[in-house]
Amino acid sequence: MKNRTPDTVETAPDTVDTVQTAPDAGEFAPSTGATAADADEIATRAGRQLPAHADLNLLRTFLAVYRTGTFTAAAPTLGLSQPTVTAQIRALEQQTGRELFTRLPRGVEPTHLAHELAAQIAGPLDALAALEGGGPSAGHTAPVHLAGPSELLCVRVLPALVPLVAEGVELRVTQGLPEPLLDEMRAGRHDLVITTRRPRGRTLDSVPLTDEEYVLVAAPAWARRIGGDVQADDLCAALRGIPLVTYAEDLPIVRRYWRTVLGKQLTSRAAVTVPNLYAVLSAVNAGAGFSVLPRSLCQDHLDSGRLTVLHEPGEPPLNTLFLVQRPGAETNPDVVRVRNTLQHAARDW
Image (cartoon, rainbow, N blue to C red; front, side):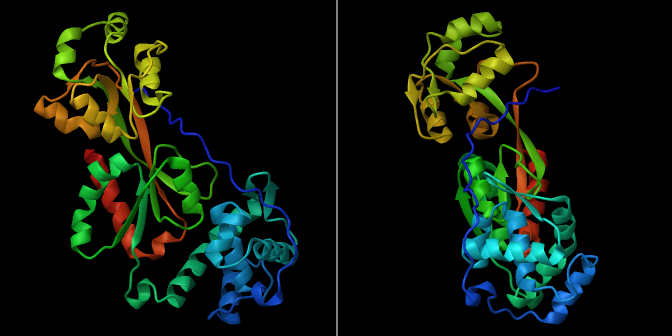
């Protein structure tokens, strides 16, 4: 079993959803091109858990809350206010006679009925939204909004997607940390997110994309000073006299390496802290000291001899990357193309 280094990025608290006053009637039911017949058809597919003449606006609001996990995050995706979303969910719960969401301090948790209802109506509502918006069936596609760690995007992801860009696929790429990016996805900002942790809950679908290996590296001059094939105790002692370069003061990646590979607590302080892993790579390559880096980021430097691996553990530390897709994003065929291309390319990462 290979060592896996769990991600330690702190989560950002979500907005607490509270009961608000009822909205104006004009905001409660925004204009839509959908007909009562559409609502009846969707109600039929939902196994008649809904009234015979279900309101499509209520169903859309339910699906947005189900997918985003909060009333607050669902509101901007619908063009509504948070009180309107709260009122519409209440109205739908009154019509069904069942509670659809359990209110929590940080958002809402779908009930068993909500999971069943979402599974039954998501397809028809997404298809209807594509028709109303001039979507894929009208021969048009929207840009694919993709997000993930900056280093991985630059080294692996964007090169893999170059053929799709040449074929006309449009990309809108954002870099960031896992939890903020997932929160933005729940709010509808991203179609696909590559993250170092699996999303909590059941509202976002994710699949393992690849395992990223981490290596302990330094410039060749420092490697010669340490010597080759040293044991953990000797290696830790030798490295105490070499400057440590890291991207954060709390040394998250290096601490995990010490704990999971060397079986020891890291006692050294950083000599140099920089904003990101690219800067770490640049400083270590220039001879500033040692660090722990993703192999994907420094492989070219290792192949050319500009960097040297200081330790070759029997089981290298790995961090699993996940590919997360926003519910409903598959109505854009280019999202599916990007997703499939990344999954195929990741086999060789």
